[in-house]
Image 1: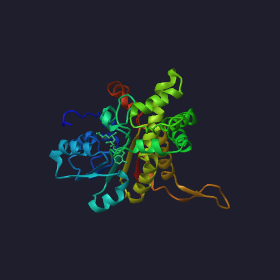
Image 2 (image 1 turned 180 degrees about the vertical axis):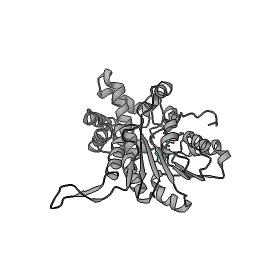
Image 3 (image 1 turned 90 degrees about the vertical axis):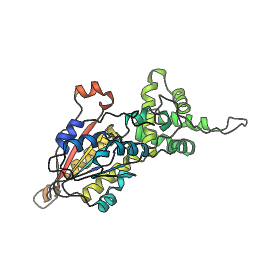
Image 4 (image 1 turned 90 degrees about the horizontal axis):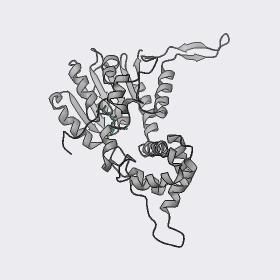
Amino acid sequence: MSQKKLFHDPVLSQEVLSELVSAETRTIFDGTLGLGGHAELILNNFPNIALYIATDLDSQHLEFAKKRLQKFKNKTRFFRGNFSNLVSILAENKPEHPLVILLDLGLCSNQVDDAEKGFAFSVDGPLKMSFAGNNGAEKLINSASAHELSKILKEYGEEPLAVKIANQIVKSRCAPQGGGEISPIKTTQELREIVEKSVHPQNRKKTLVRVFQAIRIAVNDELNVLKKTIDDAFGIMQNGDRLGIIAYHSLEDRIVKNKFKQASQPKTAETEFSLHDIVEDAHFRLLTKKPIKPSAEEISRNPRSRSATLRIIEKIK
Ligand SMILES: C[S@@+](CC[C@H](N)C(=O)[O-])C[C@H]1O[C@@H](n2cnc3c(N)ncnc32)[C@H](O)[C@@H]1O
């Protein structure tokens, strides 16, 4: 695909520039480089940044962003891989501090629109849904039991018809009674039709959104990766380092909110005199008492930003 064809409007970009990065920042770890939208803005606005380390699982994105950021080649380092590798990547690249870690979770617009990436129910494509580009969703949909599928739909999609849809998926991929070929489900449209059979026409779109989201989260193990990465980041952050996360749905935002809240509260213990004696001060300060949301102007310019939530935490001791 040509350099010109890919597009993604970086979300909450002004807020990332004003609240997350500062004139003191020396290194950025951008775990979700995407098309390099945030990266370009940050590097243009903060010439003092000495090192910009970036990861993405999507090799097409990395190639695109590398070209886009060509003029910063002396300070950029790119890695194809999961941002959950941040500890080893940072250990090898010796960042200067303060360090800013940015995670802009989820998908780029072009990943949704590109049928070949197999994420969307609105276009027909191979059943992939993997950031790394493999056929993870096809494997999952054709091998998981009805029980496993309904658990995924319930936990990751909060789907009320999880059991019914899971049974319908299993029924569809099995040989018809009386023989015939087993027919694996291979495309996004086949999955769409199966889901549509299980729901009232009025609820189709919302159900499809929930089902496709749930399968994508399972294929990429998104919530566990997020939990591990936050814990690992807390473990290596030094005084003045910041972690900023943009989440796009309540399941991931809940994880960020709870982990940030816990880390920014002092440890207390029950003593003889009080139930809440502080035994250890907090090592982090929450910079976003209220989460940062896109402005009405941003939402009207880029409707896909509407569910975004940015939370930022800073290491203080
Ligand atoms: C919302 S886009 C980022 C857009 C980027 N901030 C920009 O301005 O262009 C999310 C990106 O993160 C990548 N991604 C998602 N999960 C990942 C993970 N666990 N490790 C590495 N990259 C991941 C996706 O492939 C996608 O390119």
